[in-house]
Length: 140
Image (cartoon, rainbow, N blue to C red):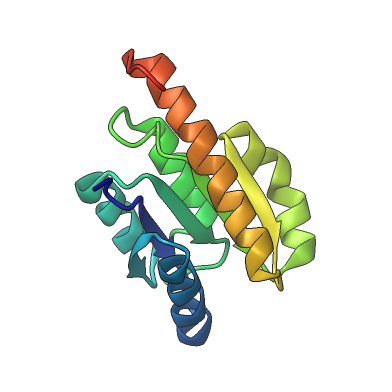
């Protein structure tokens, strides 16, 4: 049996975190949740997930963009694909270039779950191909 891809979900609003985690679980992913940026980054370092989904605005000092910057600065987390989302459309638009520059995908809330799942699928596919090139894995 193939292991289910692991996703770290960082979202500070409990209802959105629970709904998103459930949708991802129902779609066949294992999900570990966090409500704060620093906690999310520690999870990334220790769990080495297949993908991280970050809210732009998180509890604590680290925003989703801050976590993405930290990830890309470290060799052990730089390869993890990322999606950053926000209901703050103006701020998301302001940082969309930064998110893309760090290899992430920006997604505006509210979104349809199908749109999130499509972004997750694409990032996992693209991330797997990148890891294959980086680490010399053979892909079928």
